Length: 336
Image: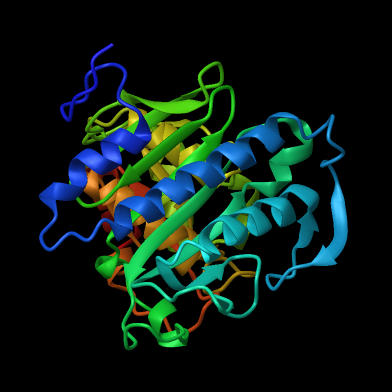
């Protein structure tokens, strides 16, 4: 089948990334190669996820991560895979992971590149042992520190509006790699018979309004009255508005993938236990907000744009309302 820059069948993820690099001003090819390395890491992780039960990768390691959460064996494997694939490439100066408390340096003698990678190696860890969808989330910034030197904390503490590329990989009934480098959002489905991600969803546009909401209603009595008011409103049919249906998988990457393709809203507000929200700004909220906004959607903390939040800590948390533009606007308006 033909391979072109316009999304004809047969376009691999690697070719798609390479074809778009000449469109970027002052392109060096380094971003292309960094995304290609993430493509490789996604294949390795996806292969292990599909064989987890046979490879002895189910269950806990016995460790607790920086978030206070018990670490799954696949969490640790996915984190190590991404670090090992990326560190020697020469395209990053430092990395940040949801599983690691401090910045991840690029060891000597590897060169220190111009980009900064941040990632959630395996989002939705609670779904691993029940064979439900999980995923990897990533974002890429340009470094702020002097070129050629080791990256520093300030390279990681950058707002989402300065992201140059972000995306996610869903490991499910089929594996998909979805990314944006600021020129639309594109999805690739993995063909295990060939060993490649092929373009299957070119220039994805999220519907302006959906018919589902995605939230953990088990937290209802922990929410503020404003959030409860919006949830009550969104599932009620009145004022010319249809009632929305609840759809909740329990993994942000899977819930937002559905929302991206079908419309609606995903929300994880602050509550009595997580007074600043639960989702990590740098590893979950900002990358997904970047993708959703470039598909025509919106992402809010409830009081402002997610991509405009200035990070002050590596593992900073934030409330999130993200999805179809009109649905997010409704949530902010009803909450007041």
